[in-house]
Image (cartoon, rainbow, N blue to C red):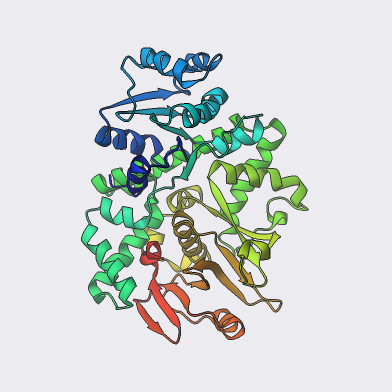
Length: 431
């Protein structure tokens, strides 16, 4: 399965400034598979260590964690010789062994010739909860996400179609109508299937939505189990309530997160730790409101006003038990949920492409779905689930702040008119 992370890993391997790499991300996004596939293709051998599967492995890090001591020991444990430049060392589920994480500092300082990748699903939570000696400045860090829609196209054998989409995006030229309709069909399939690798692989092989839903239910059960296993006892129920409420609030006309919808009379002080847990786990992410779209956008954010989006669209549909046919045919029964899905879809792709996304709201209630910094300019982005691209709030924003252009994502084909770049939803990965 093609994953874009491979390009990053190849650049990391060849970089003269390479440090030990920490690859983080939510459970089951494909971290281990990608690392091992990368190791198989680019190294003579892979020394793989899983701290979740082998609890006794952690005992090897109780004493000296310098490379000169650890490398011979680890070679003995895995039964193969670890050689600089030729062996990829992998520490999987590294959040379960604090000393292994700390050892990366010494690999960076004392033995930079060893190529080492540490992966963790709940690393942010573990570091936040414990007194970790985190190797600040001594590691490279990268977050991995579920497959984006371009990877989805390629997994389904549509690499050429994905290439045409990129070309049309760059030229602002419309796709042939038949291909546009086909691509929109794939977009709707992606909303149901999502980007979890196991779901995509099974869908490519079977096109069985019932099978996919069963896989998604198992992933959701794992997430819920993590919320109980890796959380403080008094926060477990709050985290469950918050996660459930996020799913509900994405169905509202106003998708801004509201504590009172989690629990009657709910307040920030009661649920902010739960939100932090979900964000650190990679299950959800936030987009903050900005009142003034000025650089740097982070200085303009309102920390008390934000939206929360989930990391995978398929899990969103599974959690809400949405019938696949309703999404594939965009049933009117979905009402505002169609808009929430489209917003979430765009946010997922902006995040995967490295953008910090915000939303804008005026004092009089005009709202633009996303505001990002792109090519040195602050660009507003409006999202519509259908081909109706009337956007009064976007016009208010453009009249007020005069951005060089705006982006409108909808079911409409590519184009550019009146400083507004029209982009079909399936091309969000191009931004």
